[in-house]
Amino acid sequence: MQPPSFIVGRTILLGPLDAADAPLYTTWVNDPRVRPFLNRPFPITVEEERSRIESLIGSPDAVGFAVRVRRDQALIGRTSIRAIHPVNRSGVFTIFIGEPAYWSKGYGTEATALTLLYAMDVLNLNRLELEVFAYNERAVRSYEKIGFRREGVRREAKYHDGAYHDAIQMAVLAKEWRDGLRDRARAHLAAAAPAAC
Image (tube, rainbow, N blue to C red; front, side):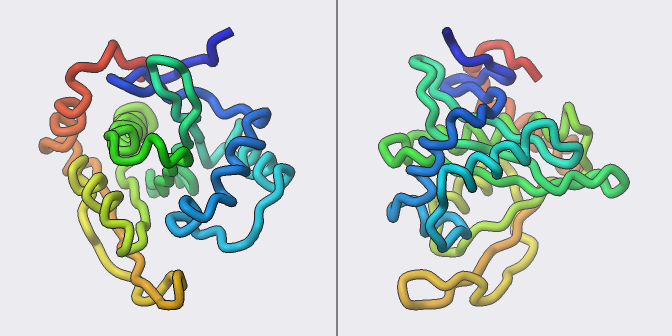
């Protein structure tokens, strides 16, 4: 049986999270190739990761998506919008592509574009923000390509590989979205199947 799809993109699908996938997510968050891009420096158990997934399922202030490759339904990562504030109409975007074989192939950029489209056009957020470590240049380029703007830096916020590194704060505002970023995101997704947003 195929996993359900909620948003269909050109090469990926965003679907509901399933706590049964916790073992695979746990493998990724403990992988030394993946860990530097997450802010999770301690070993994570399957039970801890299952709780994290369950905290996104049915939450009143968060939504999470499983990221799957469209051609074969392979689970490759997760996106989420956390800390959704009903008055400020804001949220915090997170993403990780856990399977290194799928890095640098555009899947993360497409998942970001689809989640941003959902945040702005479905949730009607006024602001979607994120934080990325400065050494994750691939992610910074991806976010800028979709339209996130740099807003600030938390200096030396991440200790990694024997040194402290800055964390870059970025965001998209609804007025920027309406003034051309929506078109940029849709252009990136132009060859997509009809989106289920």
